[in-house]
Length: 302
Image (tube, rainbow, N blue to C red):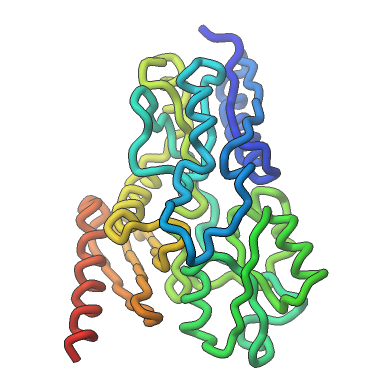
């Protein structure tokens, strides 16, 4: 049995917190193995230029390519990624070894004291996500959406020091880095559907590393894996990337799923809600997409 297992991750505060979470989960189950974390610089860490409404290049793989290279070369044994950064297909020789428990999937509002309904008319709200911008505009058309990039701490600092009344972030990120107290308001996932697979981690390993695969099985959550499969299928149908205005929110009740999906077409928010058996898997995503496409077509005919 291996005595030492190296976990590869980006070096951002959030990425390191996520890797630490995985390390702790595994250390609790395998006290005889030493798990260590290795920081790896990715293209996404070097290329800080904006992809706000002006790029045909998907950001998928920006934050994964170099880490996957080290995994294939055997320099690390496990890679921890945010699921939403992952391309639909892994490089040959690599697989998803585990999808652990999901953190809160919702988006949150961070303000200087206001709530969504009490923010002043024409309030300046920071986000670089078209999905978030469209969700906000659907509820508060008066908002002025201002471009905002950077890591969690950079964005929080900009709220305090620059001309923003509020910013929108993922609940999962704030919770994982211990900044839950910064959250002013949790945004209802049915009204503000988050990015597909938001709050989910993707633990990657080599396909032929049976020992590591068996270790990772101990932290895998199959129910979350089924939900993620549906959400990522919906993303794939609409070519979902960071600059695609679409989102979805899954709620589970026993063996049933309530799947709320949104796509913005020509500035209009089109929504579908599917309630059905979780076992239908990807079919749920296609049912939602078909309903949205039908609504878009009808709107154009009229």
